[in-house]
Image (cartoon, rainbow, N blue to C red):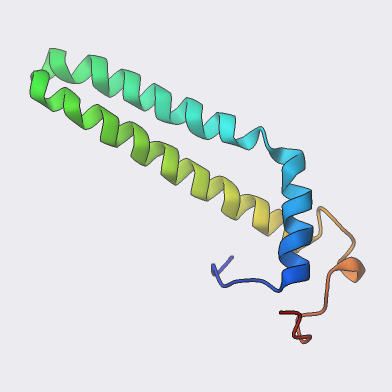
Length: 98
């Protein structure tokens, strides 16, 4: 599991270059947030009242944020696992490349 700790400069650059091939991942996050926004924004006023529909914006944004973080975490795991590059091309972790 990715710990969120910063990577060395070479690893971060290699990941940044690789992840650009998967730039469409943001579409699923935005779509998920939009669906939650629409469902809560339309359904809440019908079921609870108009004031409850204000929660739709927060629910939609929360969904977008969670889905985006999950996508980034999944892509980092794929990158670490060597889906992007053979393991020999990744900088060794014992070098200090800062």
